[in-house]
Image (cartoon, rainbow, N blue to C red; front, side):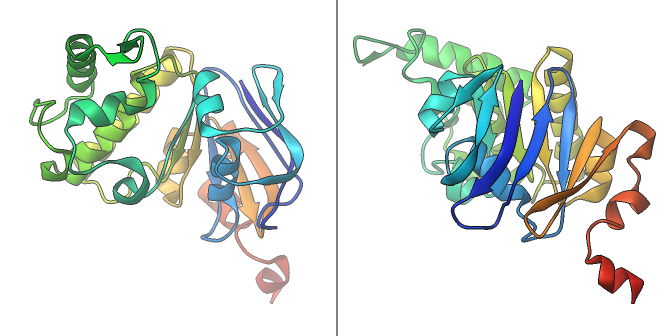
Length: 246
């Protein structure tokens, strides 16, 4: 579903990185802060300029990825800072959830927003995500952190998304909301979506991932699959090997 092939970014924080994500699986991307893991997700979605390499979505090479173009291809990126990049806090849930899908015929026709259909669609999504309170006309700013994150996640359900890129999806949410978000990811995979999970929470990544890559200083140092994906194996690749020896 998603491949990054020999990806190098203009900012130099990622060099010659190749990863792939298949339908129905969660692929983890682990690493310390500054390792380059977040930049990969942003580059795939067209938020970081690419110096060389390529992005491939379902076999099609994307020469110049952009957020609009990737949304049209069924790819969505969930940023780590929902307040800065994910939400328009003083607007209602309805507008925030439908924001990435307003160009679709189901939401607009001849430039006119179909408000009734928009509201009905968003209410169904909010119910699926167990949004509390279930009020799609309430401003997002007045929801808890966990429910705000649900609003961001709901944006990916407002259109036909096949590839979900989650960047630190449970930052600043309580335990109950974390469990619900994990269930949401599980549901996505069961429906055939591909999930790239970028996380600094190692237990989270170990629990959810079918496979995981480990980033170190802008490069992929290791890939672990199944029973080989352990805390010890991942941590051993977080640091400089010379430091480990010392």
